[in-house]
Image (cartoon, rainbow, N blue to C red; front, side, top):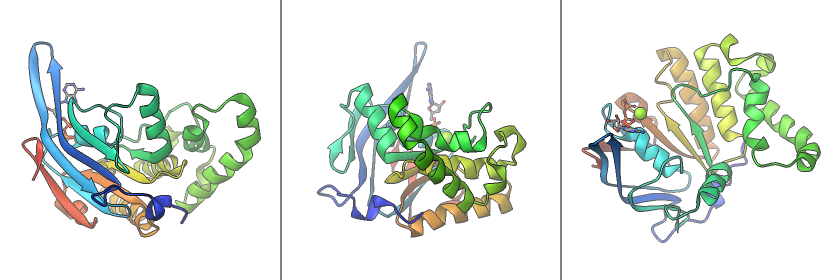
Length: 241
Ligand SMILES: Nc1ncnc2c1ncn2[C@@H]1O[C@H](COP(=O)(O)OP(=O)(O)OP(=O)(O)O)[C@@H](O)[C@H]1O
Ligand SMILES: [Mg+2]
């Protein structure tokens, strides 16, 4: 797919497509407060691949979730194309996530009871009424097939996730993340659960999307994997160093 709209996407005054500024996030575990992000800032330009490197527990996933609207900052700004998403209503935040962001997680998060093709199509079914679905079903299925085909999974359409290898599952997860043609792909340790060789081929799939213009933010604790991106930032003590 070479239809990423990222290159044409509007950016804010800072030239950023996605930007977090002075973000704070504290979790409460009973009476204990765990401050995770303490003024983290990051700016990602359209078409850029930024790697976020940090030790375990440093808040990488937290920051990624906040960037993608899966979690909310307690304080600070998160702007997509210059528009702050922090004050969005839950519904608006859902829309932001569905329309602009693709997520890939370390542990795939595929639905076990659905086939590969159904898992991939899933994001395109969210919030779609029966009539619209009847009208769009073929187009959605064609896109899902094309993506899976591209990632070498055309022989796996009808399989369920449990019947796939880790690398295959993660390729399905990427196909699903790209289903709605997002402007930015947020990947949380996408190779963390794969052996070196499988991880490498997965990174090549991501790199190909990047060459086609997709903006990527990838979290990892491996500096060699981070180095695949254009730029690496370090998350240390709740801030981006
Ligand atoms: N929902 C939550 N409730 C309570 N504490 C949380 C929650 N999510 C994360 N934390 C805590 O916040 C800290 C940072 O977590 P986070 O998952 O962002 O780290 P990470 O850098 O992604 O780590 P890893 O490399 O192990 O994935 C950890 O101490 C974690 O226990
Ligand atoms: Mg994490």
